[in-house]
Every structure is written in structure tokens, then in C-alpha cells.
Amino acid sequence: MTLRLLHLRGLIETARLDLSTEKATQADIEALFTARLQPGSIIREARLSAADIPDFLVGDVVVEVKIGGSAAEILRQLDRYAQHDRVGSLLLVTNVPMRLPQAIRGKPAAVARLGVSWI
Image 1: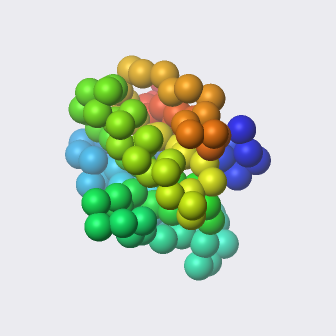
Image 2: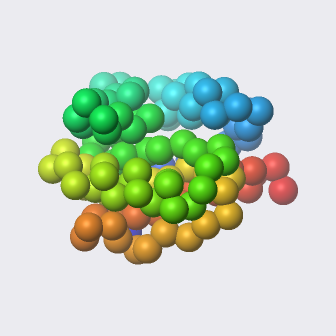
């Protein structure tokens, strides 16, 4: 796991985010990233291809937010993102109880658990 991936996961897991909807969570994460990360390092809804548009690209880290959904669908989506050269690692931000492999297509992957900071 890369240092950037660990840093982003830590930022998210220690923040109290609005979990009412996926859009609300994304807005809170965008505000968090804007406040805590280097300006210009965050791309919102980065277009990797016509079909592949992750919620955030921070450097080469895809950050995908999922409130609900099936683990299989989420993994398929992350696998598609991992096929792109611009992607160096993947961070899934979710409340869906699931695990990720340590790497997807050879790229480090991690899960940031939503709600951890509320415990």
C-alpha cells in the first residue's frame, strides 16, 4: 500500500462525513480534500474513458465512494478503473461490508470504512 493511499484513507476514516446520500458524502470528501490536500492535486469526476469516471482522482489514486450496492458490482467497477494507465492505486470509500484484494490488476487497493469516526 502506498503512503498516499494510507494518507487518504486516514483522512477519510477520521472525518465525520454526511452519510445520508452518496452525493452528500462525496461533497464532504471534496471539502475535506480541498482543505487538507495540495491545490490542483484533486480532480473531481476524472474521465478515464467515456464509461469510467471515478468520483475523485488524487494524483494517481482513484477514490470511489459507494453507499450501498453489491460487492461484486463495486469490484467490477474498480477492476475497470485499474485497467487505465493513469491509475496507480485505488481507494474504495464505503459502508458496504466487503474486503478488497491487496491489489487489483497489480495496483494497490484499500478500503476506507465510512462511519469509523462516528464510533
